[in-house]
Length: 118
Image 1: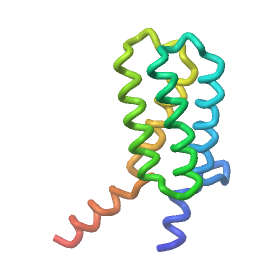
Image 2: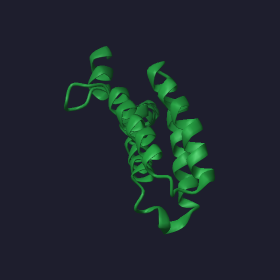
Image 3: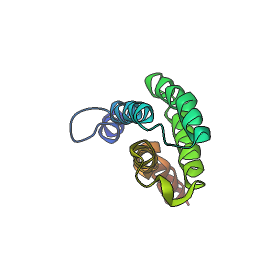
Image 4: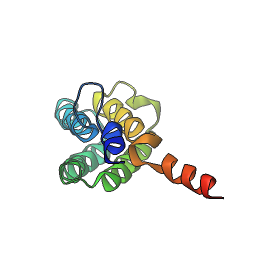
């Protein structure tokens, strides 16, 4: 069982998913600094929340980090298609998609067990 969990959390490169996500979050932080043309509300929100996501990933609170990333990604859609050229928003949406995979939080295992038990 423990080995199965390890296989889910380690990517092809040998790094854990949390490390990969942390690297992407750092890319978002760097991109925010390079894109002063982003709407100030979105820039300030990302500047406040992305460091919190990094802290959550470092401390192992992946579910909390995912909720915050998902919330930020949904908020970015509010600004419409004018943000398609933004590296920060693109990285945020990619991070949201990566963290939203069912294999990252194990929900598929819960469903399988409940079906098998019935």
